[in-house]
Image 1: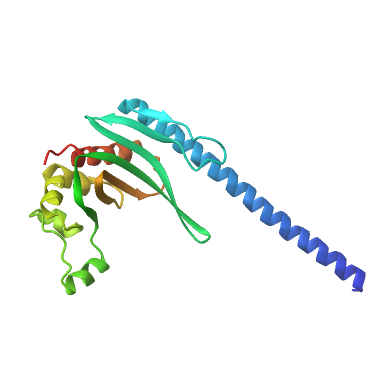
Image 2: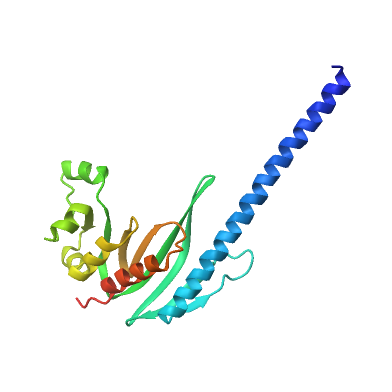
Length: 206
C-alpha cells in the first residue's frame, strides 16, 4: 500500500469515526428529548388530577425548567426536576418542595440507613429514635431540633416514608420541606405517594 492509499484509508477511517460519534449524539439527543416530553406529559396529567398548576420552562437558554405548583390540602407545594452536575456527569432528581406549618430552627434530614450510618454510630453520632421499630430500622432521622423532628415525622409521615417505592431523601430547613429521589419520575402513583408524604410532614401543627 503506497503513501496515497494510506492517506485515503486514514481519511476514510477518520470520517467513519466522526460519523459514528455524530450518530451517537443525535440518537442520544432524540432519546433525551422523547424522555423529557414523556415526563412533561405525565406531570401535566398529574397536575390536572391533583388540581395543581403546570408551568412551562421559560426560554431556550433559561435555567428555569418546567414545574408543577399549587396547594394540596392547604399546603403550598412545588414539583420540579433538579439536575446535579459533577464534572462531565449529571444526575437528575424529581423533587417536591412544600411549606412547613412552622419554620424549623435546625436542619432536619431523613434518608435510608447505610454503612455510613453505622460508622457514625460507632463514634457517637446516633440518629433520633422515633420509637417506631420499622422506621428506625430502615431510616435515619437526624437533627439538633429533636422535638420538631419528632413532631414532623409523626406516625402518618413515617408510614408514608416507609411506603414510598423509591430511595427517598428528605430535608427540612427554615420553612421548607424537600422530598427527592433519583430520576425524572414517570409513574403517577410515585408522584402521588411523594405528594402525600410531603403534605403529611407540612400539615403538622407544632
